[in-house]
Length: 491
RNA sequence: GCGACGGUCGUCCAGUUUGGUCUAGGACAUCAGAUUGCCAAUCUGGUAACCCGGGUUCAAAUCCCGGCCGUCGCACCA
Image 1 (tube, rainbow, N blue to C red):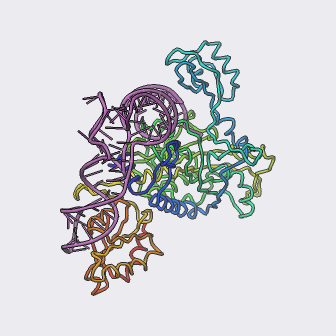
Image 2 (cartoon, rainbow, N blue to C red):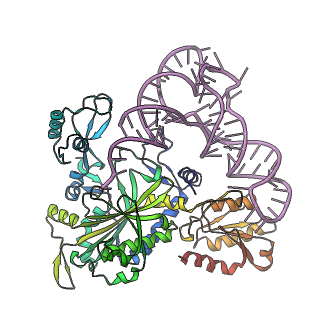
Image 3 (tube, rainbow, N blue to C red):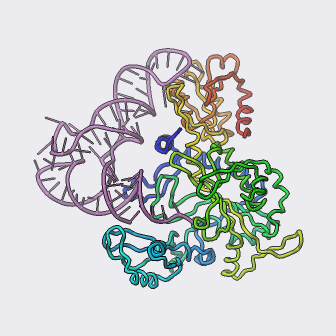
């Protein structure tokens, strides 16, 4: 079983990801870049997401801006709810969430939206001191996790979006009208989001700038169990856990509804699509769960929430937040923008403000988890490191290796390479021993290596070596294309 | 953001205690050549690093200060 350090080492050595601005000593934490292999794999991950979620369910994909006006975040609640009151000890510098600390110590109810002055007053009244050093607290200040941006010469207030979905909400009305939408309608988006985390940590797992793949399903709240396509997934297994993770119930989607574990068909349907998607990424879904969040854990906009979590070497890792956001967002944007965001449900010609169920996926965390779950040390063969990536996620699909360069094998291999390289991710390598070249390819997860030898010169066949088994078979050059194509389609 | 510990070739490590032979060493990786010709072989040669900035000193990888980053703990995680 791989651990975080081994994955990290592989990522650095093989160009999956590495720290941003690393040649400068003032490079801030929480920013990482994808290298050649990483970006290739990420693109393929997104393509799989498109195939298995967006196309499968007939969703519409948009690509919105990362900088959005202040009003958006007034409406979304991020400017109000996303600012935490913080107080700092003047002596030892320890910082605390003011509202939580006071409530815990005094039982007084301190809302996040209480003014700084009022909170200061409560601190004075109870004569609260720093629990670490008994020092005095300074006055309360605010910490907002959003990055503020000044637009144009006037520095007009705007923000980098803290979640991609806000562009979906503000675009919803136009997309629905112009694309002839019908509820329930999924609107999807891949892009970057930005959060000024206090303590970014563990490379791809908690970033300040990160990729999300979000799906917002707009639905008629009165028809959450009216979903014929639920039949497609009714037998799909869902693993649902209590909020503390103490027990996991494994049931079909159908049964999960009957047992009351999932509130309705719409939610069950999308959880099922999600788990079917993750199964195809190569993540071990037996080590996953949909954890039902308690009221305290839920985001401010969510009424029902499941976190899709996967077990990794550093514990359970949240990959997707599945929130039933009700009409929180559209209502907020409707009232702040003074636009009517209701739509007509053609089935009964009634107007309705759609509710939203979202699948908010962390791409970077998913990439990390795939790497960790696919990392394999083969003890049978000198502890060779193999990334058992699915062919359709592998940065290199096939390595093309002449056994040696003389006797025309090099030319022959380059010819085969040029016939394949436009349609497949290939890697040509003629340097060093054949064994070394095989091992290098395994480390970036290449499922196949084809070797050109003397026999090739006689009968136009090559050996195809399979990454996981190291088995080889002899294949006609003319059949390579079909073989590779089949591997990509296999799911 | 606080505290503890740490930061040397792509990776891992030696050197720091006691400043001087460090013009920074090794292993693996990588590149070139030779050799072999189906599983990290061998030989030869090469590329390649003291996190950044200041200070102390005749002399700093080594000591001091500040910053940045990392790991862990606390806190945080819409």
